[in-house]
Length: 95
Image (tube, rainbow, N blue to C red; front, side, top):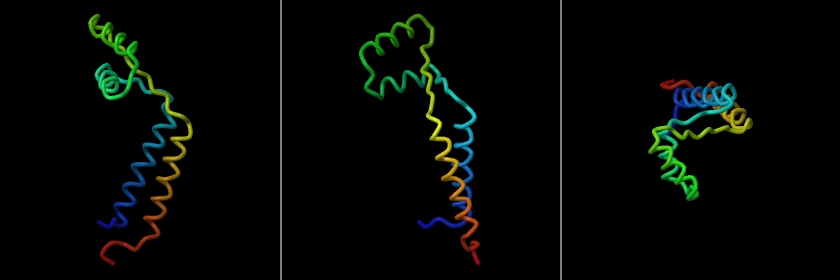
């Protein structure tokens, strides 16, 4: 499948907006369910599983906080900008 001009433009806009969001927000706090899902899918230490089990029993949600590095936002914004400019340089569809 070959991508056309509109698809490159749309992908570029989405990646650019994700990069902007990563630059604007400094930390993300996951919900209890997302934290539990990540703990089950990754190799978390036994202490993490014990803490998760204790907080689950008490009803208090243990929530993981993610702080992405600054360069990820810049990288995604750059890739999105390049894709948008590439789409503008391509031939129009159907023409």
